[in-house]
Image 1 (cartoon, each protein chain N blue to C red):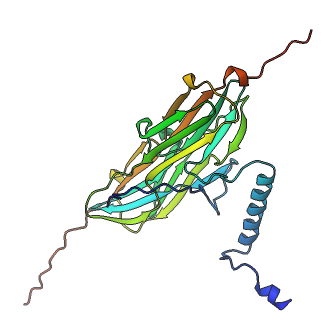
Image 2 (cartoon, rainbow over the protein chains, first blue to last red):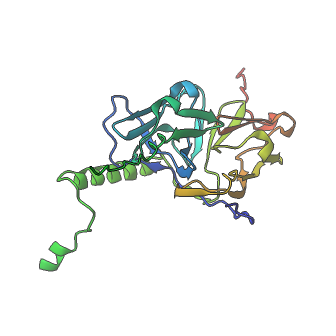
Image 3 (cartoon, chains in turn brown, purple):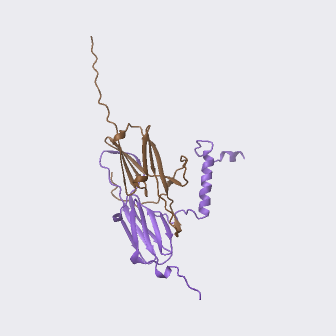
Length: 136
Length: 150
């Protein structure tokens, strides 16, 4: 599925979370844009999280709930005056409930240029066992 | 009077305080806008930018996840900066089922007018973790100068 003719990108404002769980630190919390796709025995999740460093990324999967959290280092530089501010900077947070059984030990996460690529391998289905009914 | 009762915006109210919470946030946003905390994109052109200045330079930043320096084309004139490029999302191959597709690919180009003249020779740009930062040193004529009073 490749877009052969590339269209022009439209402005989309960052989606601020409407009902975040309360955070102890003040600041903005955004919902990262994600792609979720199924490729064979894997579920792949791609999330746009510009500015997040690998050490500030937190991924958790328990009770079929996947939580992605990306912290942002905000360094207030002194002496700078804002002239124009079109976007705000804040952490990213998003939760998904996953219906498939995921093999926890094989989860793989990569963060590259602000894009997270998360591989969630499904647990191999137990081979169907045929039960023969013996008749006496 | 009765009509007024039913004219409440029908927001999906999940909890008794959610609508109040929403109103609170909207009010906060409005006050932010009035006080100049956050401006809506006046240009409406991708990408959204933040511009700051100090006494030596202008600093432009934009969020461009997944882009590398090579995907970007940055050019300047004496008082404008142009950022253009293309965001490509590589194909995931055949036999892929998408459940969600929110990320977008495409071309973009934006011209930013700067409030003063810049030194085009010394413009620096870097793109780290999906954030583009361009530093545009001010031209000597736009730098603040202290004038000693005799």
